[in-house]
Amino acid sequence: MTAARRVLFAGLFHETNTFVEAVTPLSDFAISRGEGLLACAGDSSPMGGALATALGLGWRVIPGIDLRAMPSATATDEVFELFWRELDAAVAASSAEGLEAVFLVLHGAMVTESYRDVEGELLCRLRSRPGMEHMPIFGVFDLHANFTARMADNANCLVAYRQNPHTDAREAATRAVHLLHRCLATGEVPRTHWVHHPILWPPTGTASVAEPMLSLLALAQELEGSHPEFWCVNVIPGFSFADTEEAGVSFTVCTTGTPGPAAVALSRLAALAWKGRALGNCMEAPALEVVREALASEVPGLTVIAEPADNIGGGAPGDGTGLLRAFLELRVPNAGLALTDPEAVHTVRAWVAAQEGGPHSFPIPGRLTLGVGGRKSSLDAGPVELEVEVVSLSDGTFELLDKNSHLASASGDHFEMGACAVVRSGNITLLLTSRPTPPMDLAQWTSQGIAPGDFSYLGVKAAVAHRGAYEPIAARLLWADTPGPCTSRLATLRYGHVRRPLFPLDADA
Ligand SMILES: [Zn+2]
Image (tube, rainbow, N blue to C red; front, side, top):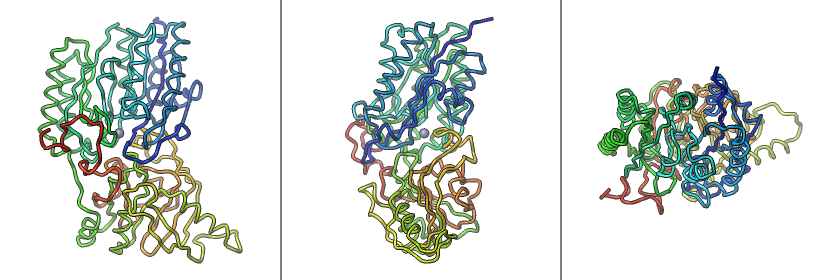
């Protein structure tokens, strides 16, 4: 019998949108460590999948620290330095007990005040520690990573998700654990080869069911199948809203073979990406135009209209009023929209509390005038004033209906929207949440006693990740352009750090 493998697990997960005007403090991160981290074994997150697989293989898991937050603005230095201090201490403590490898759950597009390549900095520090020069460093990451040279140089084998929406985050984590198991069993240690290509795609262009991703993923699979020395071939479309030197499309091959075949494989992938570059540069028509056409060509059932510029899953505040304004102007019938607005929720709650004759039954008779949305981004036109009826209040906690969803890949089994209020104004029902809530699970609505399939029109603040939840209940999915920090019109954003020339920002890319 072989001795149990001693592997240190840690996670640092944040997709940073550097165009959002704020910072993300340590208090926005969920922190788990030690027994608390082990407790997530088996849940829907990639860490849960990795831990369950490792424990199933009989490893001796050493739990380090796990820090995660929903996509948002640049993280403070405190976040990364806390993570590093604790990881460093865990490595020191476990080295004495025969540590054999480190397994990391990363996003890959994290930016802090001081580091634009946080994961590269982390891997570089880890590799530089005494005793870590030859230690296998494996892990899993989100395909929206902006992979870097420092990441490739200092990790042995990081496995990317293949699906967007990320329905396979757990599966990718499981695959990565099995590859590390192979490494420890055989003593073969792969190296990562990487190529960056001068292409930036908005998230709307990175769906795995559409081109150019479809062909790239197929080629990656083919290369993996035809080269036994390739442990994994990753397609990494990048995250266009992190303004960093190496932002954009890249590919990695983790191999125990010679560099030659990896270089050939990488150049084939890069050439295919370049050929399909325009297909990934998706842009939507203006919201008024999209909504007007939808009304003119009405279909029975639910029409879902996505507003990628205010994509909560991409770090946008989720309080943009662009689509709401189009709904109101065109008097869209039987419409629903969820909006982040803690201030409006507070106003509604205060109004309800001040009503005489409680306890109340909802909807409460009477109306209040309420400003909603438009507070967080200077790109937005500002709050919309509405006269509303209060339908319900809640604490905003829900259990995910789909535990394999994109949302589960980030948050696990439960989600907290914070205090919520459902209000109605004319044809439109608004779900006001206190925390930005990516529209990736129908329980966001059903937990409020509302069946989203009963709407005729539903606005969602997403680019691609809403498809898993809404495709099964929608008659059609549409996309609309509105002002916001996740706009698909990349050329309208002020990039300062990306390496130029770069498609589609420069004609000579
Ligand atoms: Zn992602």
